[in-house]
Amino acid sequence: MLIEAKRREERGKNAARRLRREGRVPAVLYGGGGNAEALALDAGEAQQVLRTAEHNIIHEVRVEGGDPARAMLKDWLLDPVRGDLLHMDLQRVAMDVLIRVRVRVHTFGEPQGVKVQGGIFERVAREIEVECLPGDIPDEIHFDVSELTIGKQLRAGDLPLDPAKVRLLTDPQRVIAHVIAPSKEEEAAAPEAAAAVVAAAPAEPEVIKKGKKEVEEGEEGEGKGE
Image 1 (cartoon, helix red, strand yellow):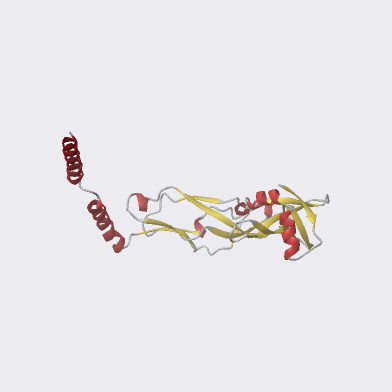
Image 2 (tube, one colour):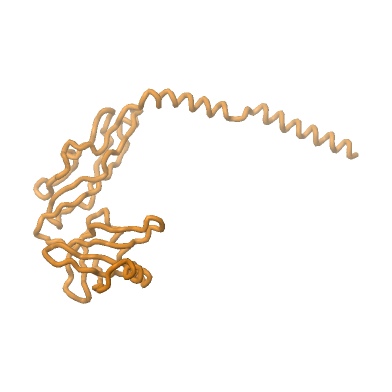
């Protein structure tokens, strides 16, 4: 994605507020052997960049018609109440220099430990850290957990990475997900909860009886009216 940016001369909170009122977002571009530049981005373009945050997308940032610089979204700040984008950090990247990034891990499938053994599937970590060239950054990592049984774990070292291109920085023994046995309290609570639901349900004969009584009272009222 090509991002058109303008340099901003004014700094501080008041200047940033004015930018946002004008439909722009304050940003900074740094790293890659160059000086840090204070920029202003179009709010719509900035939101598009933010939507790529989980995928380590490399963008091209062109400052006031100059030569585009490759950069990645490194950090951002959101309004804690309204969720508006307040600020964005972009880091220059060189395609021939190794970079450290965090990559999302997505699991799919129903574990055998849940489907057959009645266990509970838990996600312990949702991303790992790797080192590679910018062109080799994995978009995200998918792993089928269907074979996981109770007591088995998916660890960082089990994830499918190409060792010739990507080096795992996260501890290979780090647990990403596992299937655990339900606790005795949970097992005991299940039948009690079912019994409570049954007890709370109104008995059908009472409903029928109440309806019959209302009809009888209605008939008596009609008779008196006559």
